[in-house]
Length: 311
Image 1 (cartoon, rainbow, N blue to C red):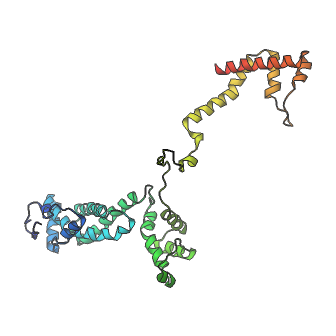
Image 2 (cartoon, rainbow, N blue to C red):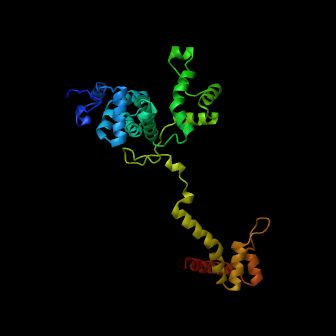
Image 3 (spheres, rainbow, N blue to C red):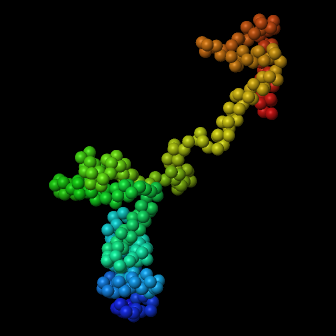
């Protein structure tokens, strides 16, 4: 492995500061390498920060970043419980460190380690929130605070003597514990309950892939979808409404008076008691023909109306 050369305040011993990190084949090797990088003194840190600010010296920026890579590794270990790759957490933390170095001003009297801590955590937090679940679980500031504090607070509150003996923890908070969390984090108890529900749930595939036997798997999409607003159904519904109002009226207007009365009495008339219009025999008596003749006229009128509606 390439020997690590100490960095002085007056000049960089290595022209390319990134060359002190040779190609590494594993995360453990990377962590071991960054832990062996030299730390900067207060004077060195101020000197490099001034060079970066005044001259945009990228070598000075590299020296500041390299000397604080171990800080990113240390912070990233605090977030291993979220099930995300450690290497990815370190990578996101390094991005936060770079942003901190770019904005750092030693004239304020603050060490870079204190200033960078916020930026490193912010980048890691954003990465976790975007990748922990397919659906983002926290969007507001209060929800983000709950997300990163609720689990640890729940374990602390529920760590009673019995729980310590059995090693078991309850999956939900009781009302008193909800009030304690809400007061400590300065949020509403309803927000605590909502975040607890989100953390307890998991991602569900709405439209699962077919099974091994080639059959379509049943998923929530089958019963969550609302066919009423499917574009084809909307168009068909609008067409049916148009037919029921203007279309039927137009088709009836094409009939003669006798056929029009028969169709109206047989199909369109509804009395107050819920009954329909006149029967075939009542219409036959009115027009002085047989009931069979009324039926034939009715059938011919309906056929003509269907043709009119089709047009």
